[in-house]
Image (cartoon, rainbow, N blue to C red; front, top):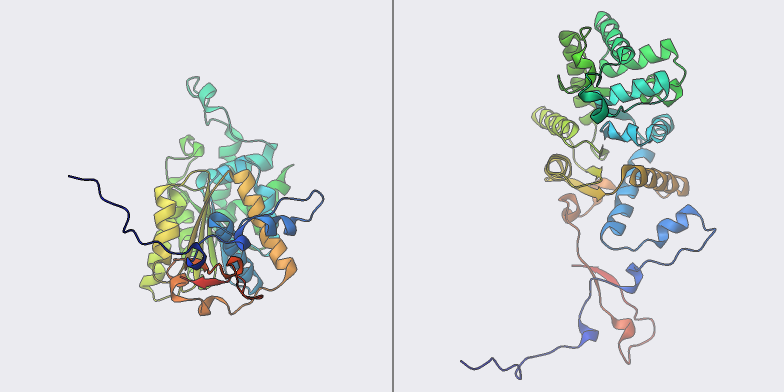
Amino acid sequence: MDPLSLEPLRTFSLYDRPGKVCLEDMGSPWKPGGAFAEFLRSLPRQLAGAEFRDAVARTAEAAAAGRMVILGMGAHAIKVGLSPLIIDGLRSGLFQAVAMNGAGVVHDVEMALVGRTSEDVGAELHAGRFGMARETAAFIHGAVARGAARGDVGLGRAVGDALREAAPPYAVYSILAAAAAVDRPVTVHVAIGTDIIHMHPSMDGAATGALSHRDFRLFCALVSRLAGGVYINLGSAVILPEVFLKAVSVCANLGHDLSGLTTIDMDFVRRYRPQVNVVERPTARGGRGFSFVGHHEILFPLFCAAVKERLEEGGCHADTYPHRSAGDRHGRHAERQCDGAEDRPGSSPGSGSQHVGG
């Protein structure tokens, strides 16, 4: 068999071929002394650079319009020092609610009590000391018992109120206390047996389960108001993605409108449950899902600062989400094309490149 001849091959002009990458999409070098907004504008308008801008704009628009923005978080967010940013978001109205797992309560309370958390598991486990701090368990279980006796609060508010009443030395760093102070809900979703306080004899499984289930129902009520809003999953690999999916199912079953929903997953690796249960499934019939990979302690402050800059600059419109294109509602980007006319020999002045829908 002879090799195929390439002589008859048809070629086309590069100047006539559209392109997905254009000069307007390129980043620009940073100039020392510039403003943060200028840094954001300097990012390339490709891939994550474009998606990051989109996610920031959607979040700012939702916050400016008073729509629901919920932060779902894993406990690691507290361990890497993000509590002050989350507290600021609650106080400023950027986040209207927070959802966390049981470990989040443990780390939040320990930070409030002694200003430090996260023990060395490897060093303490075989000595029989891991998870045996008495003050952590005593405080949380005491708060749960009082909350159960009240009968009108979930686990998050019960511990938040207890921290406010006790006023420990470092309560200013407590997400739960700050949320209770500004009357914003923090729902806590406990998986029995996963947290160190579950090993202690003071653990009341019935009370803990009842308060956590009340928080689940409260979370469902919050999710039912997510039309045109934003749900952020910050570093929760299993618990919060599963809880969020069930809340979405409850809302669908009860007929609540979740159109225009934006979901954002932020973690230092891409995981199955956040990708499927947060980014893809809830937005499959309307909305947009984003996934950003990076260290929490860098990515989340960058995102919060970008949203605040966007709100400060203005230009957020309350009525944008119902008018997006069908492709956008189903989580697909239209491919951006450039016609390249600006660089074509003999082209007329003013016939510069444009972006058109693909």
